Amino acid sequence: MHPADDAALVITELVQNVTLHTASACELRLTLQGDVILIEVTDSNPQPPVQRPQDVWTPGGRGAVAYRWSHRPTAHADQPGKVVWAELAGRGHPGSELH
Image (tube, rainbow, N blue to C red):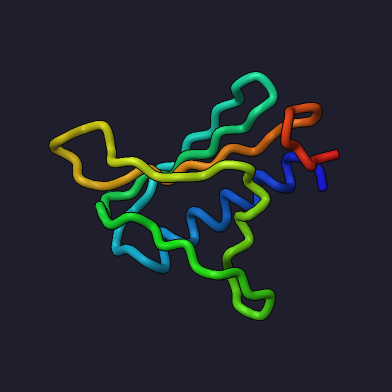
């Protein structure tokens, strides 16, 4: 897979999670940091995401191509919510399995 394909997969997964599990709109931010793609999705639901076991028969859960992911509260105290982020290693990055 090309890094852009992996990024599209993770973006789809994170945005879909907002639409399925919250009543919130979301904001998407993409940042290229050297050869690492940082994907951030912000929503207004403060509940942390729950990682579920992967199952090839269940839709979703395909964001595992990210080599790191987590979440944090939004930076603004007057705006409750969270930012779920994922990093994708670019070509040649340690730990990268992208070719």
